[in-house]
Length: 194
Image 1 (cartoon, helix red, strand yellow):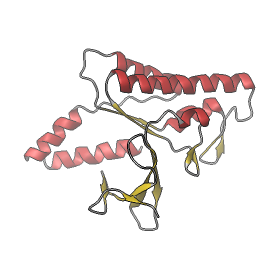
Image 2 (cartoon, rainbow, N blue to C red):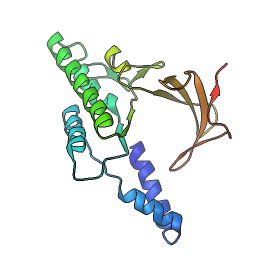
Image 3 (cartoon, one colour):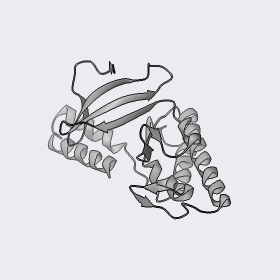
Image 4 (tube, rainbow, N blue to C red):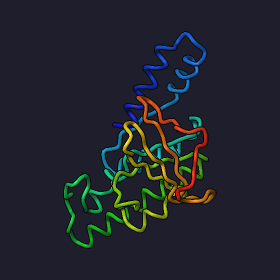
């Protein structure tokens, strides 16, 4: 729902400004956005593989998977948003199958990123504290991990860099949550937590 809301807001903005060069540029950009709905992990892997194998269309610059926890938690068993999912205490065979699907999804994401030179953003709402609740195997999938948390101020988020191959971890930035955007609140984007 979050990505859809952002796209809808951007489309409304582009339509309101359609007679300006910025509006035309926004409309052209939005015409290149494609959404694939995947109700389960099997459909998500198939959609990622279809994008990776599509050599006719231009390579995507950005792929967003929202929300990986919703796809994986039912097959891994566990709790999402306070609800016990089917298979929470299930057989070890079911857990092994769930783990195999987690690994298959991770491989599909990495293959898409490397083979098509695409940035892949995976949104995961299944967290325990600052760690992904999808298990140790998922922790090492991402090259960069950013934790978004609400702050006391309305419409403000704190983004903290938890893992990075190119920047120091622990850096944070305050972001304003608009109707269709996230924007840094300060002139500098990142500051170090003390």
